[in-house]
Image 1: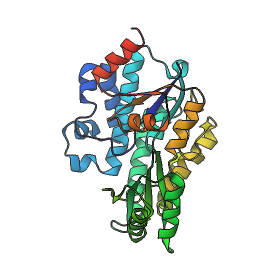
Image 2: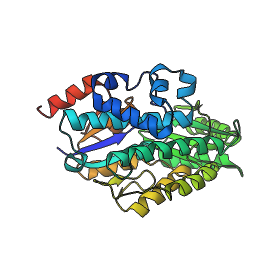
Image 3: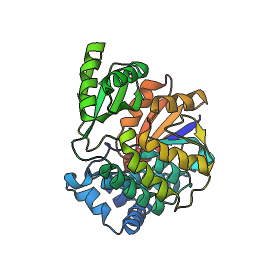
Image 4: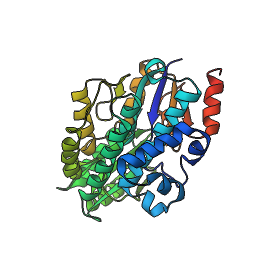
Length: 315
């Protein structure tokens, strides 16, 4: 059995996430306290008590989701004897989850990761005035067809594929007018559904260039070590281990496509047959099973999930 650990992105957050882990395992509570200290904020209280309107803000949701992922991973290490270096073939994450993956593999410290994600969230929100951009999900079109829809819809504005999530699920991002045109073109092209997403900014498109510049500056101020196991990078859809290439990938990711379908296919082709989604929610587990035949995909984010993982490992 070959394992890969994958880490969720924005949209998987919910009030209360991680609280059961913190109540059950001291190492999880210590992880949340470490993130709180790094940000000089009681982010854990916001995660557990809300309000949801504050938790979903990009600058809070991104470090919060990372905190749940890393708390879960530390519980697996302490309770189930899991070691990323020894037991995982790859790590990968969806958008902000790539930072969680790098922290999991020891490439970034948790404190640096929390601060980077706070900067990333603020920069992504500030890059485009509210209402100027939009994102839409196009369902039932393959990636190439969705790219063609975006190109036709652009008409001098920005419209590009932001996420290739697999199984005919592609998200496009750009100027609101162009994305609204893309929805109509997609429907006429044969998409099963095409609809605007409730997001606060047009992520993963050229409009995010100011945020990419901010992340280049922020990443230049932290130490990025070679990861204990290879990272399958969003924008490259292949394994990377060189710190300079990791930094370049993280910067490119802000304006580039999250090639999740290709990332999962790459890991499966390399022999991975068991994917574990570490942290909040189970979005990636569903996507993985639709992308790669014959693999298992299991979310781990609660004490019950940890117990089930231990049982699988015969502990």
